[in-house]
Length: 142
Image (cartoon, rainbow, N blue to C red; front, top):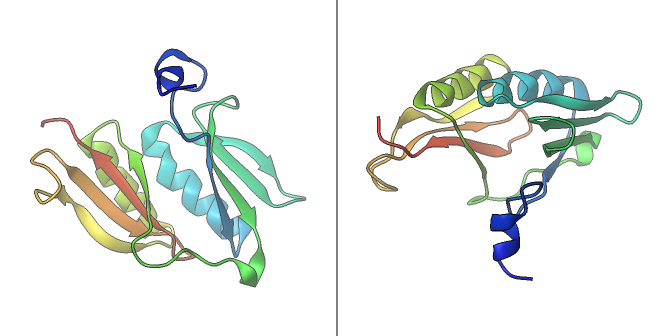
């Protein structure tokens, strides 16, 4: 298999299948991630309150973020690690950041152009309630 697989397979185009986070609280994370991913058209597509598992995606066949409650044993990775979401617009980057701050996240960089990454690199950074660093980025002009 080569990278051509990802370019030609319409069901699974990207290299990553999904990303999973272990979090302290299912309820807090549910509120946070449901609001945070809404500007991207990403919804809660799997919810198992008994096992305290959440799944987010564009639909049930394209789940990209999984959240598992692990209580006090949940730990974010160290410095230099973050997850970046491609945003559909600059407005979605702003909405992502606002939703994060309004739902228990901590700002790690307000929405704006990051010229050190590129002239059209419009991004915002947020820490989720457990300390995972997240980014929304839109790289098209305007």
